[in-house]
Amino acid sequence: MSITIYGIKNCDTMKKARVWLDAKGVAYRFHDYKVAGIDKAHLAAWCGKLGWEKVLNRAGTTFRALADAEKANLTEAKAIALMQKQPAMIKRPILDTGKTLLAGFKPEEYAAVLK
Image (cartoon, rainbow, N blue to C red):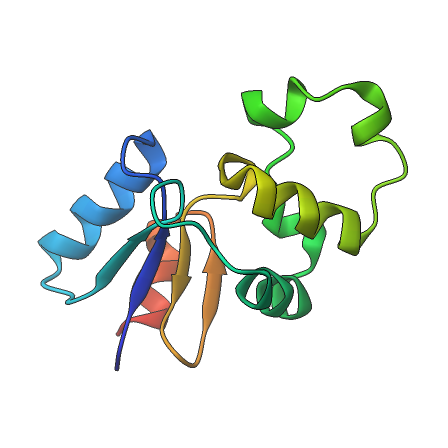
């Protein structure tokens, strides 16, 4: 199983997820989308599987700092464009096992998927 975890290096939730994976001996590749970026195809695939509402991090400071006009009338296409322009708006982490995709970090979900 080839596992990739997507996120931002300095995010506290990312740190918790990576510590959990390391403690369980799970091999993974880390993709820092703030440094390496993320392409539209990945975002579209994630939104297709999880729903754009779950992939877009509305609770983060980056999203909250947007002008009201940018936050208004959100659609999947608009959300993808915002996330591609500012990857900090993507929910963290995104865990891709090749078969399963998870958004956010909940140890019990990781344990169930990575057993």
